[in-house]
Structures are given as structure tokens and as C-alpha cells.
Image (cartoon, rainbow, N blue to C red; front, side):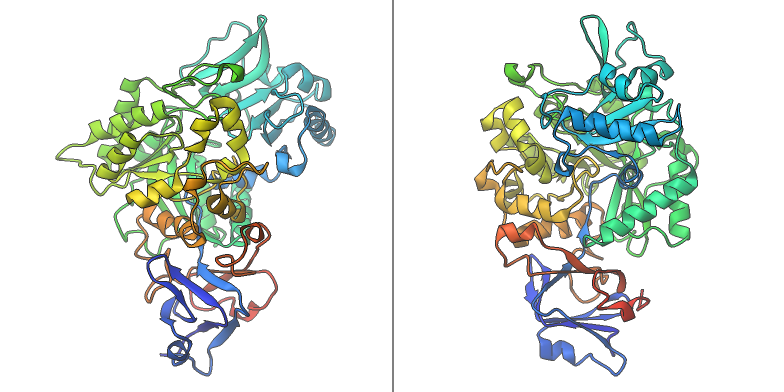
Length: 554
């Protein structure tokens, strides 16, 4: 049997269990053979096309196990306020909003994403009155990098019907100081403003999905997720994804997670006939799988809304964070979705929120609907204790962490929680050593989707400022890649199809610009993806070296 493609000339990472090979052959969109060069060469034929790694490394394609693909795509056209893009002063925030106001018709919404008040020179969030000065004729809504806090100007609050006497909604907060609205909205209070924004059209959403998928392919990804489908445009998002898939514009193999909060779409989607597809192997050849439901337990540690047993430092503002729901409501929701057959992908960062979620999952266990084999997930799962880890392992509940949080927010964790608690956050090595399968991911657009920063963080535990937090939690490069590939596939019931490069597996492959499993940690940061295959088909080709392979076996 002649191979469609033969990859030689460098190391090929088969997976953590089987290490490296010298060559790999692809046939019909799957791995035909992998191993020693002379053995794989036997599968070459007259029509076989070749890729010479030239000392680079080929690995399983990356899997973005926790991101928000549609919001990421839509955000590409919003005001960029991220610190790494030189937004480190309040004046720069206001300058960018003012520029958007000049380019937007009066009355049009100005949306921004990614500012970090901890990185701004003033050390606080922008105020409504400051946004009013630079955009008096536009409603403005700027979302903090964590996605759990946002700032609105006066026009946005007026359109939302929010005034001085508007009560805090359950699981949310509207900030007031000196009897005046500051414009700050936290957690579920943000919906008050978002609900009055005009939703994007289906065409706009399909375009955003396509662009996001292309961007991910250029970074070495072939699989991704949208972790709260319905959060932007409601039930219409399902139709947009289906259209993107039907038109061949999806780009990534998608694991879809429905918004399960009361304001979400999970119950409506069920009523309209959508059913979970979560059994092992069931999503083998699908581009679009609807597998899970997401409910929020708390907020973010950087935004002081993650729920903890012990309070934040008084110097940071104190308090113990925000529970999005009382215990009874959380138990009802998780029990309901568990019995329907959905995987539970539940947001919980602080130890108190993790406890609430764990109890609710354990209470959902029954003879008719056992927890065993369901692979329920706790998303983020950043600050947990040893007893909680043991219970998760016993029930097969997966942590889905974002190591990049340590890079982008680690110094803020020290400021908010103290060094001791920051050191043990997101314990990647501990999870692996105990037998967990932590699926590394980015939570983009909360953090950068750049996988090389995530890999660097797992290997070094360094923050963006160079602080090392929890040196004992560092991983080897191979372990880090395992968390970004196999663990992600396992969290989506797809480890029998992708996540390793063994005969019969889908030929989802990334070729990087250097051997990032052998280089200095700092060199990981400047690595690029040169080629990305999905099912044997080239979906990204940086240098045009494999242009002839486009259209090879799917």
C-alpha cells in the first residue's frame, strides 16, 4: 500500500507513551506507518509526496480544549486592549476607544476586550465618566481580560436600564462608589448590558468562525472548542456553526459546549432536539460534535471574583469572591444536565467553588446515571486542595486548566492571594503524577491563544515578568505537549482517534519551525508552526513547501 505522504528528516513525536520515530507515512487521512526510516520508506510509491523536516519536529496537532472560538473570532474586529499589545496605561485605553469612536457612526456600539487593570499604570479599572469623555455619542463596553468583569459608559448603562437603584442580580455585582455608578459590572451582572447589544448576523458569525479556525491552524491546532455556545447570539450560534461546517469553513474539529446557565441556551437546544454525542469514539470523523454543557461556579482570581474559603488579601480588597449560584441551584442544574447525558464542563477556579461543583457532581451520581465514565470536567480548577484532587480522580472528573494563566496573571495572583497560594495554583506536575489527565488550554480570548507561551509556562512556571511560581510543578517538554494533545483529545472522548501518531490514528499533525522538545525554554517562545495537517490535508502551510499536498486524502 503506497503512502500519500511521507514525512522524514527529523524527530516525530508519537506521544508520551511511545516517544519518537524517524519517519511517518499518511494514507487516506490516517497514519499508515510510523517508526524507523527504512521501515516506513517501504510504503513509498511513485505518487508519494514527501516532506523533509530538515531537523524540525513533527507532533500530533494541538488541541484547544478550552477556548471560546466564536468570541475569539468576533473579537478580532473589536478594540484590542491586551497588555502585550502595548496597552499598559489608562491613556492608551482611552486613546484606542476614542479612535474607535471616530470610526464608528454615532450610536454604534464600541466593544473592547483584554485590558488588565493590574497592568495599567493607574492600577484600577477605567471609569464610566472617563469613557464618556472620549466616546460621548456611543455606548461602550470593555471586557477585562478574564471575561468576568467589564466596564460600561453612561450611554451603555442607560440603554441597559441600569440606574443607581438597580439591584445586583443573583451571582453578579454592579459597582457603586460614593453612591455613584462606576460602570463596573461583575459576573452575571454583565448580562444586563450584553442583552441590549445588537447580536452579530449569521454571516458575521460564520466569517468569525472561519477566521478563528484559520488563525488556530497557523499555530498548529487541528481541534478546538467553543466553551459557552450561545453566550453572544443565543440559539442562532448553533445554526452559524452548522452553516460553517456545511460550507467547509469550520477549519477545526470542534467540541461544542452549550451555555447552561439559566440565561443560556442548553434547555432550549434540548427542546429543539439537540442531543449529546459523548461516548468514546462517537465523534471519530465528525467536524462538529455537541458534547457538553457549561455552568459557571464563580469568577476569576485576578478579578477578585473566584470563590475561596480563605479571603483575598486585605491589600487587594479582601472578600472571598462570588458564587454564581447558591448550592441548591447548582445541584439542580448539574443533576439535570447529567441525567440528560451531557458531559458537565463546569467553571470553578477558587477552592470554595470547586467544592460546590464537586458536591453537585457527586450528588448527581446514581445507579441509573453513574458518574463513572462520564468524564465530567472542572474548567480552570486553579486553586484546589489534595482532598479535592483525590475525589476528582476517584470519580474520573477531569481538570481542564490554563497554564498560561500563570504567565499572564501569576504576579496578580501573588498580589491578590499571597505568594504561598500562588505557588500551588494550576499544579500540572502534581496532576500528572497522581494520574489525572489535565488538558492544557488557553481560555482565549481571555488569554493569548499562542500555544508557545503556554508550553513555555508549563516548562518554566515563569510569569510574563519572570517570576517563577511553583518550580516543583514544571513539566518536561514532552509532558507539556502531552497535555496539549492527548489530554485534550481524552477530554473530548477522542483519544482513540487523535492526540498521538500511531497507525490508524487521524493524521492530525503539526510541524514546527524547530525541535521545540529539545531547544532551550526561551526558544519555545519564538517557535512557529510551519505546517498543519488535519486528516492528512494541509490546512496551513507557512512557506508553501507542501502546497502540492493541499487536497491530499481527507
